[in-house]
Image (cartoon, rainbow, N blue to C red; front, side, top):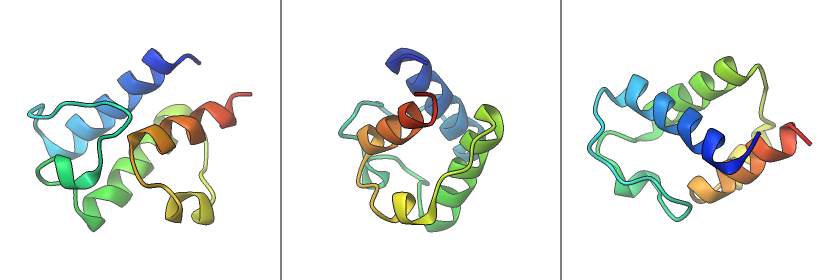
Length: 80
């Protein structure tokens, strides 16, 4: 899975959970940059990504995630 495909999965999850596309998505994007991305919706977004890709993230990895770039790296590692 390449970076562009991973960004598409993340974007679809964000749109599905947040119900808007009013955001710019790049590696430095954080929850503070996107309206509606809060602690509860964060877990819904992660769950949406896990379900779509058939993966399960480790809790420690999720706790160490600081931005979308970290999420991309985590997803990529699941497919190596």
